[in-house]
Image 1 (cartoon, rainbow, N blue to C red):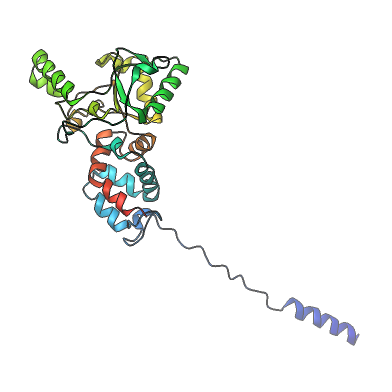
Image 2: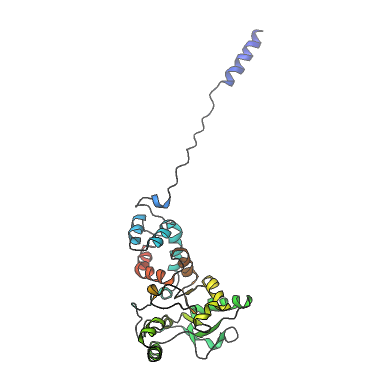
Length: 281
């Protein structure tokens, strides 16, 4: 009996022995991007701090500033990809920011050599070689969807644009010409990365090719330069036929943070692109 009591006492002692405590830390609260301190660096590939990013964005439109500050890590990762492409692809060229008279791309190629894959509305057109793989891929994808993309205008020299602008001034007057034709030096066509498709008229917006480009061109790095209802921003009427190549990295950042408006992106990049470049580690 005494032995049995000792055994039971031992079992009882074992049952009440202290157990190891769970020492796992409670999860720390993850801060939202808006609450990140100014000293925080949102992307390991950049020396830029949140404070510097907020200061840089202070001059931007509220909707642009908000879209970037909600996703600073993702934004800077997209910026890193843009910095890897040819800087000329995102040059700002508009009525206030002209190209030099003697500027011409160094890698222009004749489009006539691609007549087996492109529909060309005239001979002698040229574009930069760097955009040709994306253009050919886009034309191929459109054809698979039953759409023919015909090219009507491509690279234009300063001198050709000078003649063209003068022609339109004589034909429709200076005021109307200023809204639909660029003065020499201010045309994106001088970059060799802008293309006019189809009829070069307003109804192209409702043409199958126009609708296809509006929906799909950004996937191949092409951006509509002069959208509807943005004449006060771009300086030009709606041109559903005019697309400029920015690269796929460029159109991703345009779509994600700039509302799909090319002018907003190019102005932003003109102001801040060098800051991002110098802050990249």
